[in-house]
Image (cartoon, rainbow, N blue to C red; front, side, top):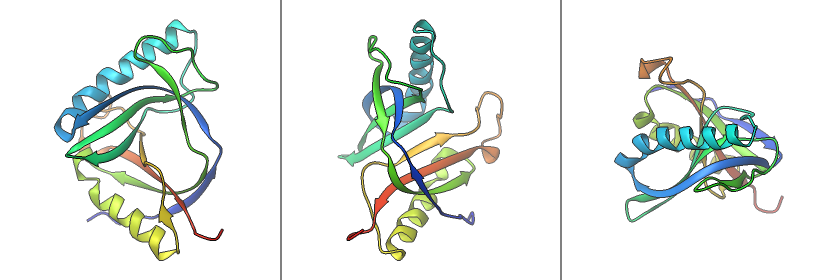
Length: 158
């Protein structure tokens, strides 16, 4: 098992441009590629560029399905276009770790983050997100992929 280091990050809200849907786990991977391409095309049409790597935010699961919001961070809210709309990643305190390896092997990283938050007197709040630091098209070996996992949390009474 990978040895995960968890850090705390205090961040401001981040504007994003996203596509959103509800999917079962096997449907997520194929959908993400299409979502990123669609969001990138919308940004280009609006003469905007992403300000960071792609991310996906996962709400759920609910009956074996996740509501997924996927796209890119941007400097300011975009104009809605088709299925692409503005959203935001929340500000505040988050626990962050980096997973190295295939996407379908990240569950231990989530367990470590949740345990770390609770051991520091906190509780997870809101939905986590994954930022994909490597492009699988340029890095074909899944064992080398780096994914940052971010879980917002709060410490009651603070």
